[in-house]
Image 1 (cartoon, rainbow over the protein chains, first blue to last red):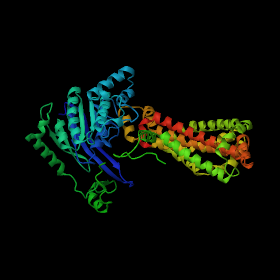
Image 2 (cartoon, rainbow over the protein chains, first blue to last red; image 1 turned 90 degrees about the vertical axis):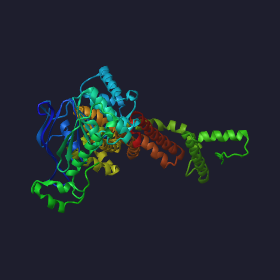
Image 3 (cartoon, chains in turn purple, brown; image 1 turned 120 degrees about the vertical axis):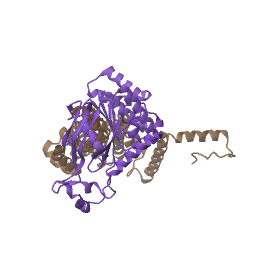
Image 4 (cartoon, each protein chain N blue to C red; image 1 turned 90 degrees about the horizontal axis):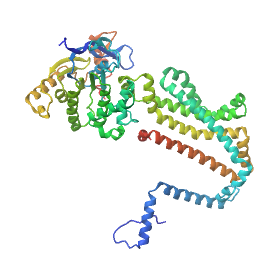
Length: 295
Length: 274
């Protein structure tokens, strides 16, 4: 596996300050390592607040890890680059631009101009099935359509790795199924590597070659599952025994180290003075349940 | 007054009545028509009130309109034009200085610490109290009137622009960084259009306030237009006084409405915010 590693995450840790305390830091990612072969589809699944979005932002280069490093094709990631395209949880479209002009935005930044820019953006809108909507403003598009525009924009710079942060979390269940199949189709056509963040077990299994399971507080990879269904995958595999077995496996992994309701972020956070072993007293003196960090 | 009748079966109604109620209903949906009805009613009430209390307190509409030629020969409109020119200069200076200043305060925390408090302090200060100081600084002339308008207008522009810049969706900026857009490109392609609705509505409030500043400066220095206006009031020449007041009010209302129309036209996506 090491030999054909295209994306390599090595011992990455990342913590954030939380609240107003100057000393307390929340450990979002703790010593995360994995590798991924070129052209494969990898999902990362975990409970809300387990740091999976943070991991994706680190891979995109929007943030830097505290320790460890991330390599793509042997090159260290230190800033966003055109070899990576990020699709956000929210479509993040510019409301003052039409669908087409939202897609061209990525190309503008690369200095691609004029007819070439429009031609490429049109081709991408066609790929995501929105050719008839190029002159529509985001407010005139449905949530699923907006997310497609976001995907087209990420594809515009022709990245080798597509990073997707729960892209279908905000669309309805039916649309979600359609978008999953569309994504597989596009992925098979475009031959990209995809890192896909989700909290939906079915979605992860349906799309991926590899599923990584993360635990929360601190974020760690606790299980790796390989999924070998033939491609393109049909809707029917969701009903198969093998699929059900994998769902069970993932759910078990997820439950394994998931903290109980009363252990909040604050309880699990480490204080730089007292060290990580002091979790129990922090739990007793912590400000109670501060929620699971989901938005 | 019969505006419309319910259209239930069995109602006895001649064709012409039915036709005219239909027309009234159609017109009732038009905004201009509803406005016309309301304003006509107001005018009628005013006119009746003016006849009752007499010309010493309230001039009739007829008298107000009849005073136009007198105002023209007094040179009131040309001096109003001069005052408006000064106002426009002051307003434009406020826009040209205020928008970049607002962007700076919105973007930079340091600029906010250094400049923000002066802007906010002056914003809540009674500007009228500053006028005597201003006169000692810049005198009674053109500079004074322009400065007063500037002070009346600029804070709305600065504060609204800063608020608009701060309101930019951080996710959009993240997206900009992710696709590799430079700082400048993010500012021009994301921050600027995103804060445009704020900037324009700040400009709109500032414009309305500029009229107030203009009149205040005129009356304060009591020359040209201000002299005419106060003179008319002291001499109780109410028809002329009223007409000038109307003209100024209409100008302010129309210019604000024009800016609103421009706002709608160039920032159609922001419709939900209004």
